[in-house]
Amino acid sequence: MVDNENEHERKHEKRHEEQSPENIKEILGVVSSEIPSLIKNILASVFSEEAGRNMGKAAAAYYKEMKEGGLPEQVAVRLTEDYMRTFSSIGDMLRSGSKRESFGKAGEQIGEEIERKIRQKMDEKSREKEEEDDEED
Amino acid sequence: MSAVSVVTALIKESPYLTRMSFELFYMYLTLGNRVRKTRKAFEKQLLLAGMSKDDAERLSTCFEDLKNGITGMLKQGIIRRQ
Image 1: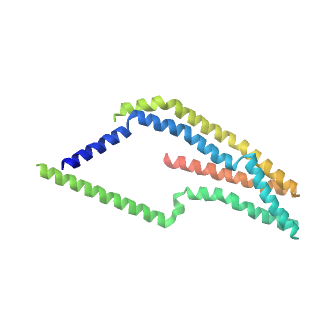
Image 2 (image 1 turned 60 degrees about the vertical axis):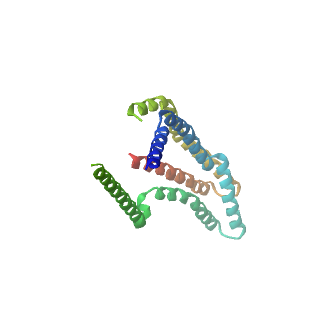
Image 3 (image 1 turned 90 degrees about the vertical axis):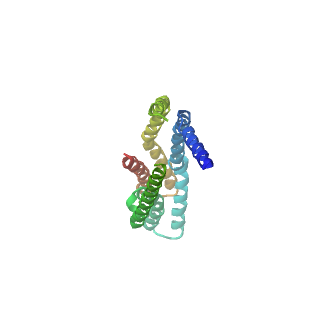
């Protein structure tokens, strides 16, 4: 019982330390410097002259192969367009991935399950607390 | 931890947060320019391979689509949080 109380106090102190202004200051400092650089790097990997040149080289090689293979100009262009569409579909995927609706029924079921579990835990906690109060009385 | 200390910490950190907001806004503003440069470099390679200018320009619109996809995703994320 005493051990439990000590552990509880230790946890409380630890949580208090984690939420101290110094720690918040540290976290905000790291977040404010890291997030922009992270986004900058992600964007630079897709939108830069070098990335465009490399992508262009890949598409050009694909187009050249088609033409050398004897395909008509329009067909080669259309196939290269399809090839490039796989690249732009990443954007659509990101957009649809960020929508909750895209998870469909499975997503709803997971949400309901999480809600149910949380409610169950809350009921258990409140019941325990009531029992403790009764014991104290 | 009291609410006062949290507010104090936030005020102390406001220069960092302001800088971060400005950096993100600057990134958003310069994104169009970045995309334009990327498209130019991409089109140049296709022109070297013998493709017509119109076709190269049409193919390079995929970068615009990707940009719209990424910014749309970020906007949706911000709107949902609000």
